[in-house]
Amino acid sequence: MARTTVYIVSDETEVIERAKTYFTAQGVNVQAFSPTQWREGMESPVFRSQMLTGMPALMTGLNPLEKSNVLPFPGGVGSNNVSSDLKVATMNELEAKAIENAIVQYRGNLTEAAKALGIGRATLYRKVKQYQIDPSMARKKRAA
Image 1 (cartoon, rainbow, N blue to C red):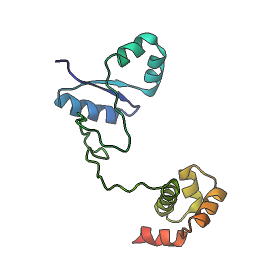
Image 2 (spheres, rainbow, N blue to C red; image 1 turned 135 degrees about the horizontal axis):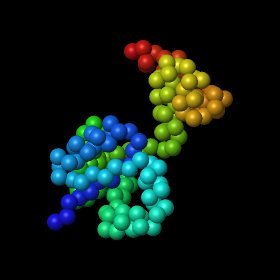
Image 3 (tube, rainbow, N blue to C red; image 1 turned 180 degrees about the vertical axis):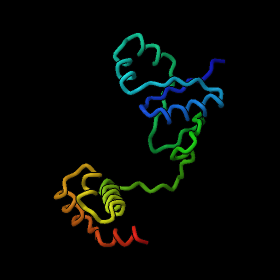
Image 4 (spheres, rainbow, N blue to C red; image 1 turned 60 degrees about the horizontal axis):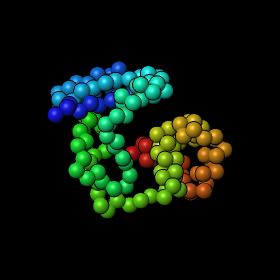
């Protein structure tokens, strides 16, 4: 039986080394690429065919992966157990929560929160009003 290979694309050497240590202990081959190497490799027909021939694809979505062989990564987020009673949030709910989290993280500084969210300050002010978010409450949450 052929050994499983994990392909890692990252510039962070610490992440690569942790993954190599973990997966090697699990009996898995590890190949690491920088994003530049990966992008250039995918442009090469030879590299692309070597990578894609027989490589299983991991599909994600709302349904749990059934009978999957997904190895947990130490310190990773998420889990293979998907609750059947998950509530699907609307985009507005997600956006409001992201805005609220940014305001809390930046202790009510809306200018910094807007930068972190990648939106303009005026846009953030409009969305704060639209979603009825109270920045002073965010400051209190952070203090608590």
